[in-house]
Length: 147
Image (cartoon, rainbow, N blue to C red):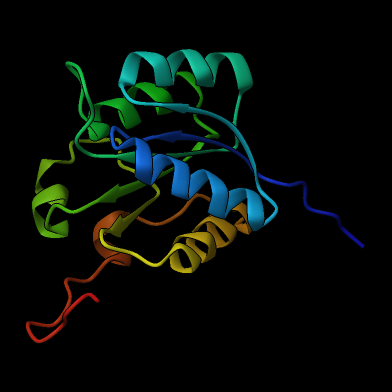
């Protein structure tokens, strides 16, 4: 029987309350949160130091670099690190900004913690590279409302 290791996660989120809520939810789900950062520079240091399996990050970060630029930097230095972008931005707008390297998944805000936990579990247990964002994230129907 194959035993999957617990995913090690770095959270990059400018909103401290949301970062805390995600860290608590992930820890309760059995994941290991190895660090939290509010900007890309601190995130890169945490990834260098802890070599996490996954980076959960916001598009809007403090500082000079946005989440997509951070994804490109992380994938360049640590290609095996899975990246999940969490954002309130329209997914089509995010997809239009992606050049080359893209996040493995995008989750729209607001979200229920359990939904993000499911996305993490799926990304962590997937053996092959994840498909392109546009193929996996169809736009929601016009009548779709997040609660």
